[in-house]
Length: 135
Image (cartoon, rainbow, N blue to C red; front, side, top):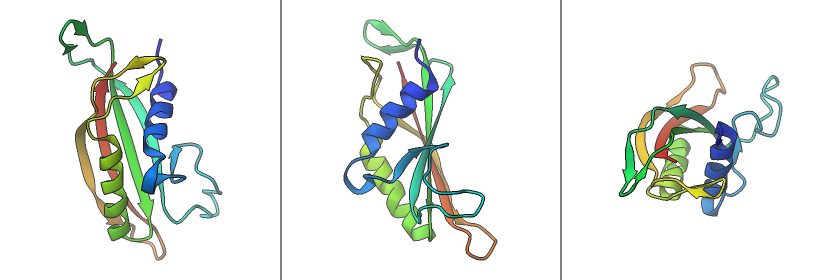
């Protein structure tokens, strides 16, 4: 049975190339110390949740499970967040992930949240994009 960590690993591998190389992490594995705020200036965290499968995935095959992949970008400015979100979109849009030897349906955008800057002085900007697929 496939779990969230297997899908997250495949999504992280797909994103950790090109402009995103070295910037993409599992949500709990960002290098540095959150408590002290000692984190990279720009990074992407990936979290995955299971959702109801949408039914037939493609001709002759029923989807066994649906997956929602969230990519949260954290950077110093909203402009940087938008740029990195563009890189995330370029890396994920329409690709099929291989999870435990099985290919997913092509990833589709499930929406996004605009880049926003926190209210506290020195707080980073953040943005979120979501992607969905079936396995």
